[in-house]
Length: 116
Image (cartoon, rainbow, N blue to C red; front, side):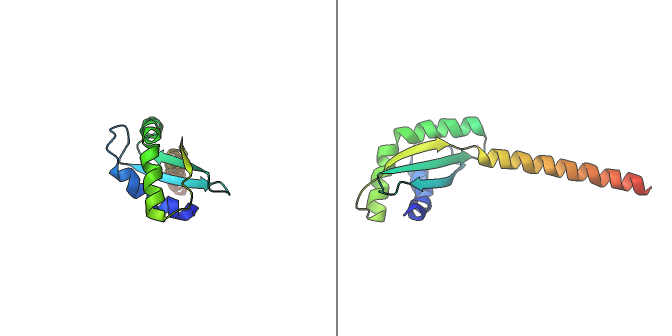
């Protein structure tokens, strides 16, 4: 059921008209409680941490709509309470990738200088 929620959420989020909700959001992870009563949704934005926080505020105010949409789309027996959580793992991953690329470029230049 977590995977089904993870698959449907991006489409539901795109329907929301709240200006706080970024169009560059990613659903990182969905944790559904064993009894299906509570669902934690980890959200990240490609535009940074502040954008993620603003989007989560908008998503929290639209949680009732999101919950109702999930219930109707997935034909669930019980609709879980949804908690949106800002997750900056994508931004951190991009930062680490940038640093690794910089290091690789620096090492490549040092190796070329050593060969000369």
